[in-house]
Amino acid sequence: MQGFTESLVLGAGGLNIGDMIIQLVFFLILLALLGKFAWGPLMNMMKEREDYVANEINTAEKSREEAQLMQREASEELKKTRQDAQKIIEDARKTAGQQERDIIESARAESERMKESARQEIEQEKEKAVQVLKDQVASMSVMIASKVIEKELSEKDQEKLIHQYIDEAGEER
Amino acid sequence: MNRLNHEAPMWNDAFGISWLDFNLSNVLMMFVASLIVFILGVAATRNMKRFPTGFQNFMEWLIDFIKGIIGSNMDWRTGRLFLPLGLTLFAYIFVANMLGVVTNGVVGHELWWKSPTADPGITLTLATLVVVLSHYYGVKLKGGKEYSKGFIRPLPFLLPFKIIEEFSNTLTLGLRLYGNIYAGEILLSLLVTMAAGGVGGFLGASLPMIAWMGFSTFIGFIQAFIFVMLTMVYMSHKVSDDH
Image (cartoon, rainbow over the protein chains, first blue to last red):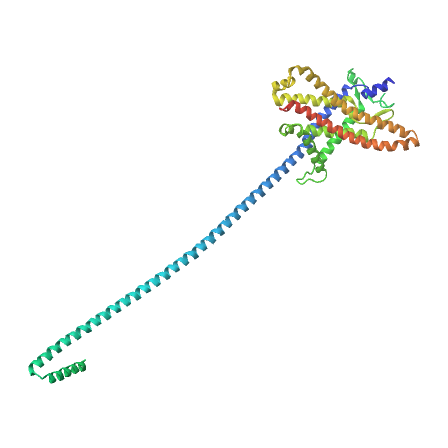
């Protein structure tokens, strides 16, 4: 009965130094072997996978950023192009307007000038005509006077004569 | 006398050395447990792939499991050092516990096949190894001065208690495992004896035996988990800065 009690208290009836040594040696050997053949490779593989995944994520992130950048660039480019086109159209419109104004302006100036020159010409012609008339009237007067003096005509004849000359003058014209 | 009329296959006074005794059953079972763990470990890590399948998945789950235990106790930078130890301890203890649950083998009157962890000497050896390692790493990682200061922290008069604690830690760590597994085996042997007693005994014992085997499996897992958990707790007391 004492043996049974003892076995309940301490299992195989006490601590066996031999078992302890063997356990220690076995465990240390197991630790070393598993570390070398099982845990080491397994953990390396897990580390490798971790690196791989991290790498993939990094790459994906980078290419996403790149794509975003490129998209932004492209949209900027598009915006700039649109602005350029707008500016070109605006410029063209402005130039056209300017040209239109210029043409109108120059046409108006030209017509003004032509009008002016025509008026001047008319004025000149008029003056010339008046001058001619004046000259003729003067010479005719002189002629009439000399005739009057020459003949000493009666009032009736004088009048007749004047009319005659005047008529002559008119004919001459 | 051991385990209800079964004797342990003892080899006393080996090589004529008076204090050197072997329980050959323990030696055998330690060897078997170590071999199984080794074969499983190596088998699981052959043909490793980046995309794990089958057994490799399980082993990676195990690694994450032990990582979790370590991570809950200390900084992973120092904890990484103890991952192989934790893994090996867990695997070995779990397999050792299971060996006794699956069956107890008796040859003649000698009990050959059992859990090696149902022997206090073996569990205490593992516990001592763990505690000694914790002291070793305490000195190695924090330096002798910091390590010594750990004994008088937070108050100097705690020194004797701290020293006692180291021994009590060792004892409780080892004996908790031993007690749980040994009790499980005792009850299993009792149920087996009962079942072998006759038809009524067989019918009466088979159902509790199935239940108890399931429970023992659970206990075996939990005890392996607790052993590793406490190992890491003791380690962290010695190597962490915040304690």
